[in-house]
Length: 271
Ligand code: ATR
Image: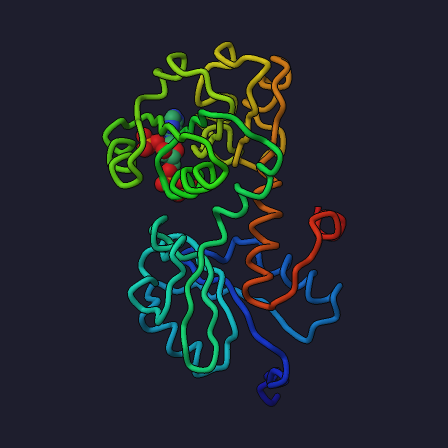
């Protein structure tokens, strides 16, 4: 039997997610749903690859239009780009690459996924729980909304390092009760379904929350985390992690295709 191969139509625009691993990512089917709904002749696929320095030139050659970048490449791709937006440089991570006319442009749309759901929420102090990549985006987003961010982390030295970079105060998770934040953002993986050891736990005790606090949990699997459930019981207003997911996606889609989809439309299509 002759070998069957599907040769893609060259007029179809190709996008993809670059990571290692990334084959588990739901990003391509979600992007493809948006392309389908909008009747855009484009596809999104998985590019699981250990070495972006080898992959990006090959992708350019093949006519790939844009990439979503994930673990562990968000920092590694930066030296490979022609131009990086200032916000991405400050955060120290690029999660979106636009390949256009032989040039490589880097963006960070992660922080917009935190910034946009905070519209209409104001206050003075925002406590960021965690000090990983997502925390950097949270520090940047809350600063842009006029909050004073404070980074609290299990490993205090890691918080300190990030605090030095952004010029903000830091501490341990147990220091939470010393602050009276208007906003709390959980960027730790505590409460995540896959995080078996901590699936029923919260990064800080729910008893330290008060009703005037806004609680934003970036964990979105499950949609209702133990932290959010506890916050609701305490009378806090909550923002679920699906909001970050949606708004990050909208921003990335806008950067890579030029199309701005309303949040309600995206929610209807993908949730
Ligand atoms: P990301 O890039 O998604 O932020 P990360 O860099 O792995 O992921 O960071 C995970 C965050 O969750 C860290 O702040 C981590 O704390 P440490 O720096 O002390 O490791 C935090 N975290 C993970 N498991 C935790 C747990 N059981 N209790 C408290 N914090 C935890």
